[in-house]
Image 1 (spheres, rainbow, N blue to C red):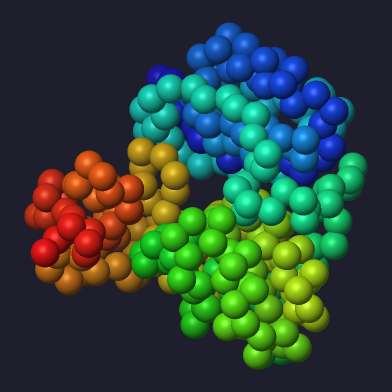
Image 2 (cartoon, one colour):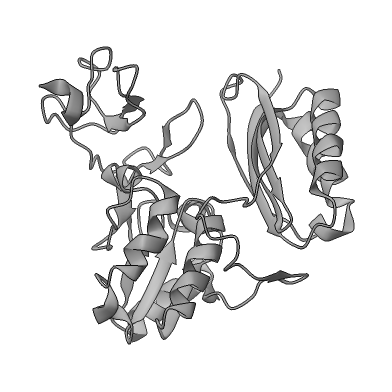
Length: 288
């Protein structure tokens, strides 16, 4: 029986010709029946793809044969077989859209001037030694169903909102304290931590491999609570079967981990919703 798998990956590395890489990646995925989303820029590659296990393994092996991608960060998860309806391979100014391509500096070793990397084990050691602030590097709606305990969750609707949020002064009181940035797979924190360092935050860390790698190590027995939002048809995943349910339905406040698109055609929000109201949800703007 075919085994569907999801591969989450990124690599910050200078690319002289992103368009040529795009064509190669598109042809490679099509030849293997791989679907998903891949973004390329002059600073590297970022993607989430899915397919049968053997095909995804071939994709990874061939992609890593390209020397700049040899040390590409990868994470595996279970797929359903229909997680990605199509293939999209695009070139953009950024492989993660902070709207600040001019601020990012990348060399062959990755992002220059980012936070200190922490493995899940090193994170626990740091928390035992210091009073740290967890800083969520995701969109605010993602944190509604899962987050690190007592984390600061910035009120951002998109990743592009982070620059203005950092420049607002709301977090200046944290500039001389230990801060641990985290995100789904680690890529957003690569950029976020560098933006924080350049703005005078003096002790910035980033959780290497993100929530995904932390959950693989500790499940629900560590500092993470709830479900993890993912940007594919699965919508969310849990690391163990007894994950806490943190979300509450936008319509009736019932405890739930389910997330769906707002039912209003002009609305692009993701909303927490229970099964009963899943077919008729509206964001606050359209509900009244």
